[in-house]
Image (tube, rainbow, N blue to C red; front, side, top):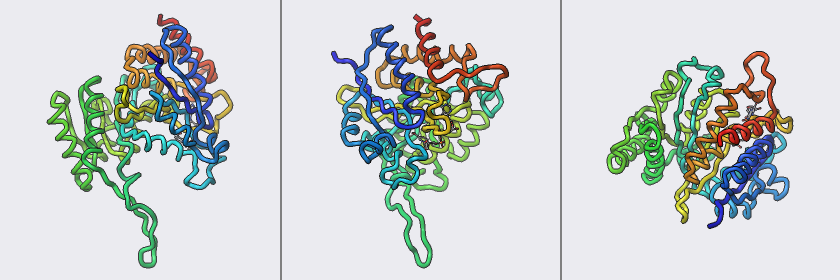
Length: 368
Ligand code: NAD
């Protein structure tokens, strides 16, 4: 049997720096656990534009479609800010998501005990927090037609359209219910059924899928604005939250900040199962290319390393190995090892990106 395949797309800014640390972890699994991946690497974002004149070459898109999972760093940077919209670095990422049909975006908000002081909320509100936001990623107002800026009478009007089909809602609801069964068995669905027809349909379809296929999972509904308040008031009431593309964009960023630094936050974007049963999948840190610290060895690689842990869990069914990696990260943080973004305590000297990766590898070795 051939090894599972990975395509690494480091991208721009700190992307290549943090992905180099992911490679150390991948190497550790091969040499120390006999778990080998066939790894290839290619360009995305500004790095691809510089070489190909496009933020994602067709050949790279084909590779992404063929592998078991894509690991992405980050795209973008000031050098590319003035490019035409159609070739901006972000278009490469959007193309990957759209053509791989990655409709379920999983954003965990998990608070490591060692970092509970980093939250802007009180420690007891966030300590031990472990929630998962499932955001619909390929439809809704970011894609709906008509869209554009039009002339109407003597002024301009900007139009975007929120549009969801029943099947689009049902498939992301299923992703959320499946996840809940492996976690706390609770799903809270968020929309604005009080003011939006698409919200009424969302609530109806989630309720139908629940009744027909997942009656064992506890389901609740909340208006998205109330959900935002509850996330700040008492986030531990939630297990899995499922919501649309626009509300998910906002709610997942808000939930992320409950846990401290951007440098800690992983994500997964999953699509339908491929012929081998694995879902189409792209794993990436939530943060961007951080041009302000790029090339200085200051970037925190943990978000990317935890994204690889999600790949182990959701693409390769290696939950125990994902636990091992997450525990190694927790252990290193418990030892007080900190990159510059995690500093707060007096007298702690920050480690570099590479030193953080090495510390996690050492913890992995200690786990054997
Ligand atoms: P950013 O996430 O790149 O940075 C925000 C702040 O967080 C910066 O101060 C940065 O130094 C810090 N930061 C981010 N990741 C860090 C890490 N791993 N370790 C330590 N500190 C970290 O967001 P931004 O500054 O708004 O955007 C910069 C560029 O990234 C822009 O071109 C933007 O379009 C792009 N971007 C890309 C993605 C993506 O690739 N998915 C996401 C967001 C932004």
